[in-house]
Length: 93
View 1 (cartoon, rainbow, N blue to C red):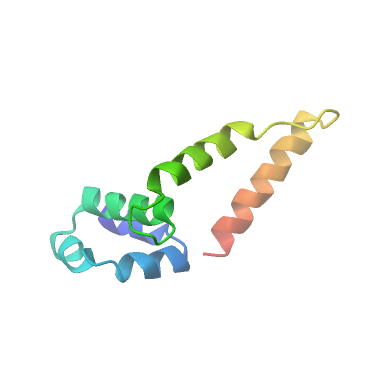
View 2: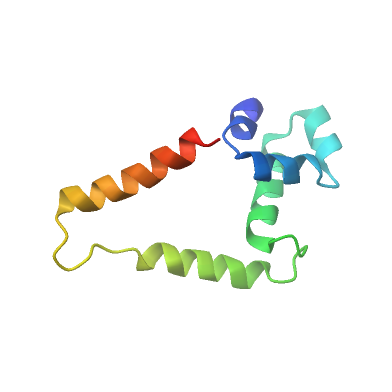
């Protein structure tokens, strides 16, 4: 499971995880929860340790809930738009 978590990270995130101060210990133990905590810290902190972690988390959640279908956009078009973004993100990894 540890390898699965690490394999789905994009190259930039994987590089940041590998350069994290606790990575050697996490990698030696194959610590799945430690890896997820490391990813969460990197994702929400923008590299500033924990300085803006709470604010960035709130912004991420708010942006997630603001995603909505446009007024005259069909459901199929809306689904296709987000499916294309998801597939293009998966292919670029």
